Length: 115
Length: 113
Image (cartoon, rainbow over all chains, first blue to last red; front, side, top):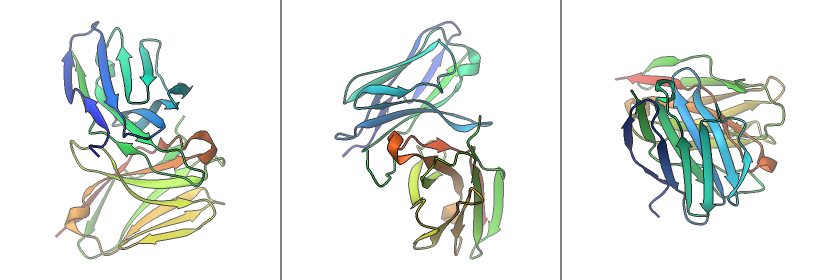
């Protein structure tokens, strides 16, 4: 298995532009998570899906952020309009729900720079 | 609101000695705890976990201890090796909530030869 695949690996965009980050989870996994890594807060949970349904989006910082999971093999995180303070590394992770606890597997991340 | 806290941003130890990384959490609903390791330009990778029904879990050089009454867990690495140098993230989750993991800010471990 190729693991969790994120694209692009790096994104540089100008303030005000729309940015779309993409994620392909591990086949068979039914939970998908979007995290943002910052120096101050570490890995912040932005939103997570279970069986393609958003369960908790309380971590999404503003209405400028939106996420979708149209099917079990694809998810997007969109920022519109983007701002310099959105610059961070964004990680996608997936897991298989378990009744005894399980780990999530992370992609390599997308480094977003908004200038 | 940080539900998981790692108060030491960095730790430096000598090769062969013990590394102890600490983590505190605030939500008593957490029932599954994990440690992840992260190298630069890579995603975090799972290291070891522990269920709330246990107080210790060991895997080779890595041991995680859980103190539920204190809402505290720690990761012990013995003996430490230079290849262990990385950022370590503590995470806590709720099994009934699809294991929604909340992470701490991370501790950068440096193991000196």
